[in-house]
Image (cartoon, rainbow over all chains, first blue to last red; front, side, top):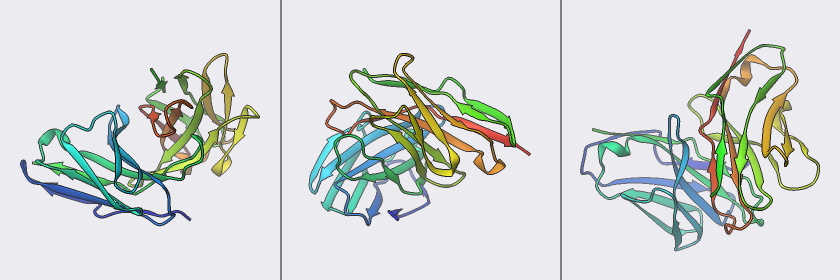
Length: 114
Length: 115
């Protein structure tokens, strides 16, 4: 089974702190994604990466950055956390197969910024 | 622009009855369509997908979905609901001309199955 793990299930940070969320997948997938999930809004794509050191902005990249130094690891960075970044963050991975691949999700990190 | 609509925030059904969770989409070209389920305090799990071929797709846990091109719909169905099916369901679409990376998710439909 594909396994996607996230470094924390729950995080509480203060406004202005730098926050690192880490994601690791064990299936050698090329594609990795960071989403945030908010009630009534579904999942919104923050960033994705299709290869090591490659990244593309998603729909809501403002206030976030990412890093992919190794194929299995994709990190999301909040440079200066703000209260409107309080959310559930989901990491996902997927193999390259045209566009028909399914995504595998981690358990999520619930981040609260106070 | 791509979009996905799940018109019902919540669906209530009695155990043993058939269930339907609705999804409509808007995308240029032939879409890739997906259903995911999120159980409490867990990440999303893939249920099923439509890529091409037979319009009726079968997936995990007895779920199936029917692709209807003329109605641009991809409704999720199950003949007999279980209490354990209670969860949050997301429909998703990916257009074939977006490099294969951009997936649009619906807002989600919460399914309650009552014993």
